[in-house]
Image (cartoon, rainbow, N blue to C red; front, side):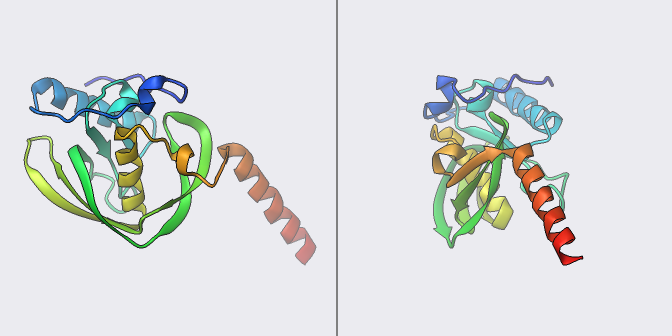
Amino acid sequence: MALRNVVTEGDRILRKKSREIEEITDRIKTTLYDMAETMEYKEGVGIAGPQVGVMRRMFVAKPYPDEHPEDIYFIINPEIYETEGEQEGEEGCLSVPGMQGTVIRPQKIKMRAQDIEGNWHDYEFEDFAARVMCHEYDHLEGILYTDKATEVHEAVARYEEDEAESETDSSQEA
């Protein structure tokens, strides 16, 4: 396995729709394992083919990083066929380093996809896991979270603002 370079915002490849995978070859499997290693190294929870320069409908995700850190999903040719509810939350992206944005996503999704061995599965994801899967799915459609965000800001700057507000609130209470 090897680390892959992550394509960043501004590269046209991130705006193209990915092609379906007709055959899961050893090369596809190696790419997926490389993507998983890259995701882990970059401390992400997901990474899609276009983010490593591969225009195929595949992504790797770790939607339960706290509860089940060992669970990594290898998703091939996904199709989200049902959504339910709505949730608003902060998102970041390995292709948009140092930034975060507030995005509205479905609360729950149902998705059909192949695993790394080519077997088809129906998956259900809720809450943060649904957010992760939708974010990665969007990459396959040429969509970045910044396209859907109601607000985008520097990740560190926002954290510092929150800390400053917290300190001001604390000093006013005393």
